[in-house]
Amino acid sequence: MVNRRITGFVCLVVILALVSFQSVMAKEYYKVVRADGSIEYTTSKPSANAEAAKLPGLSVISPDRSYAGDEEDPENAEDEEENLPKINYTGIAIESPEEQENLWGTEGSITVSVGLPVDLGLDHKIQINLDGIDYPALASTTFTLNDVYRGEHKLIAKVVSSSGKILATSPARTFHIMMANVVRPAPPIPTPR
Image 1 (cartoon, rainbow, N blue to C red):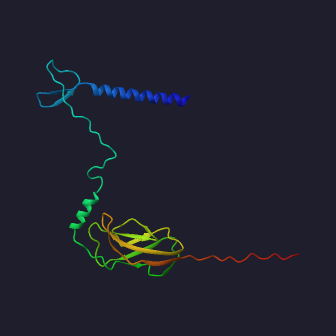
Image 2 (cartoon, rainbow, N blue to C red):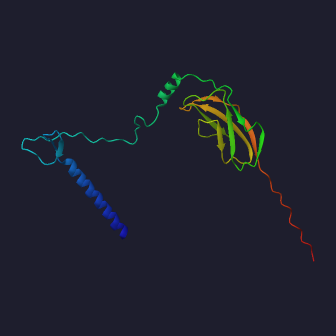
Image 3 (cartoon, rainbow, N blue to C red):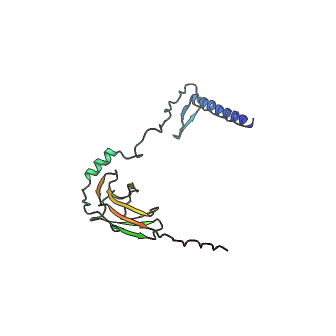
């Protein structure tokens, strides 16, 4: 019963708001320019020969459309990349962990270091791929990866442009996360009495 009253009240408020908004929009407005140059808009006719002001329509922005500055246009981004000087990243390599390295006591967190033959170019980043999963690209050569647990893992580093184009890829690096097993002694066998 209370919910119906609340719902009815909310509907009434919405209807009244819409009606009052419509009545405001339906009124004629007059533009009055004062002697000091200030401008006033009013709904009351200032003189018998006053003309209604022509107001611009409402600006309506559709949420399903993108606007300038919202997103980069991939075609323009590629054109901009073509105008940048080419950087040769041949020789990109993962410096650590080493190939076939066994890592103990990592507690699920490892540090990856990437070596580059040259400095990263403007808008270029390094992206790490661990076991087929791409991590976010960063303008850094050192990464900390979390939730890397026991087993064999494959690691690749890529240099990517701001549009996501792969500019260079390192050779794959395989490493192993090792964890100690706790061997518990067998419980004592009870002796018969």
